[in-house]
Length: 136
Image (cartoon, rainbow, N blue to C red; front, side, top):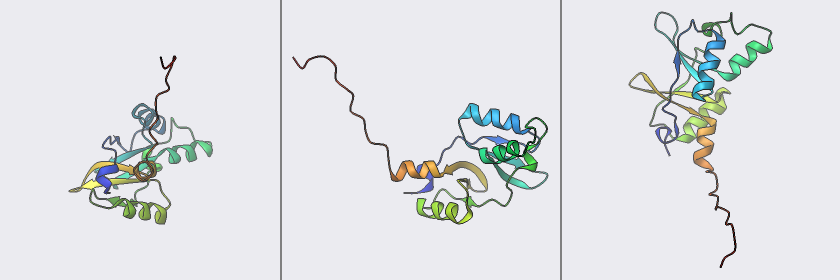
């Protein structure tokens, strides 16, 4: 199975000047655990994850005065849609992260997470609806 089969195509993009609170609100509204940070005038493409926000708040920093650029990972490993899930999982395990930005022709087209890979490798069992009443 390939990354394109597992990735989420819902890609939340933010700018480096978003506060962590703004980023968290957008991530929560979209129900995603990471945002792609696009900084065409600076570091290029980076990623801000829920863990980055949690670490900042845990240090006592205010999410209203901390900006995405200060917490963005910029030495990002990018996947392509044609990577295998094994290649993506290896990159994540080697790098110690849970999200990969998927680039297609240099543009972010998706994000694949550990959860996405697990869903493909171990799909949830089908649930049989409970019956009610008597069989007659």
